[in-house]
Image 1 (spheres, rainbow, N blue to C red):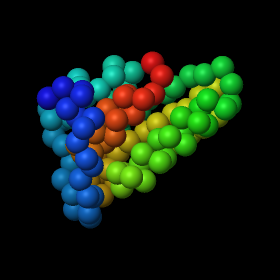
Image 2: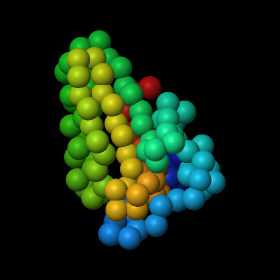
Image 3: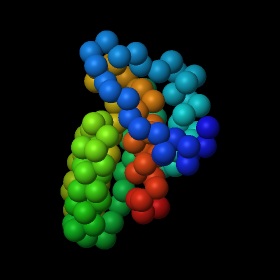
Image 4: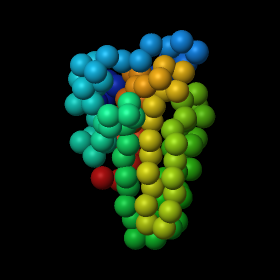
Length: 113
């Protein structure tokens, strides 16, 4: 599966008891998104975007929020001057699911590099 394929998928409904990805599955999907996404041991993927002002990280956070609403899968967003940190995990699954990587790929399609 390519990053483009991943970005065209829709997030799956997340319900309590959803199954998280096995480590090998998460590692395979991690290869399909931008290398700037860090896969952490605490079952999250995280990307930090840097800017030279406050307006741009806020604007990107707004774009991501609108995408999250349309997909029903929401990240943690931390906006500060010159920086936006985006973190995904699926709380109902207790870790990463395919939807986390789908959202990362969708963000990669419009976010600055």
